[in-house]
Length: 385
Image (tube, rainbow, N blue to C red; front, side):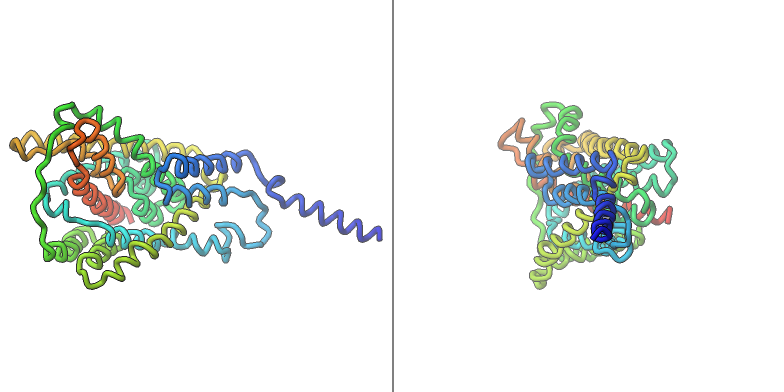
């Protein structure tokens, strides 16, 4: 009997050493708190809940402390379920599937009816290259700097795709940073928009775009694919799936496929992507000086991207005749946060003129920003891979 109690006592003592309470350290609790903050922003403040709820819960899940004893339960343990899900991030499977869904959801009519808005989406990508130079100046390696810089495009899938190829060791921090700034668009952009415009500019009324035929809408994804990928072949995985998804939508013959790509498939990928990206932020890997620098550079990159789009519209207006001028408030939509930044353009515009609807106009540079960020990622990948 004594030996039985001794055995039970020994096993109980061993069990207690494997609990999270015994294995945890202050970093785990800090990251769990961060996860709660993400969930609060998503649920209470309605900041991109479809993204922040999976990421926030993933941050908590990834920071439950345990001892690696061959149970195959951790994200970084071979053969674990989470590791299997995470392979879609590491190997870059998820971002192209997200772009397929984006393409199936996106209406390029606003861009086709006013093609000069493509330039606004291109101008906003200046934030990416400015951030690249800043990251180099701060001591990051060229490949790492490229992964960090893409945060300025406010495009989470593109940031994950590029960092998985060029800076896999920083991918968790880059992905969380990119999605964080996407969710914080309603807080970051409006003050910049008010600062960089005057009352007269904010009330500019834009004329409706021309009618776009169905033939044009069908030809656009085909011609867009050829023009962009012949120029930047390294952007093929993202741009190819984006334009393929859009062709499914616009052809009118593959409605079922377009609906699947934009709903069920997209939702599944978002769940797996958000959860595993959140899990990758384990305190031992995430709470570093590099992570803080990444968040700082990402913030500056996003600010520069927003400002670049607005300032570029103001510059365009110098050369445009009266009646053809563009409201600078849509310049913020040049970043790739679709359709959040376009909604912000409309929201801020209606603060100064309730009858001025900018949403459809803002969708032009907004969808151009999606193409622009994917092109920028392809350029960086082509130069550095």
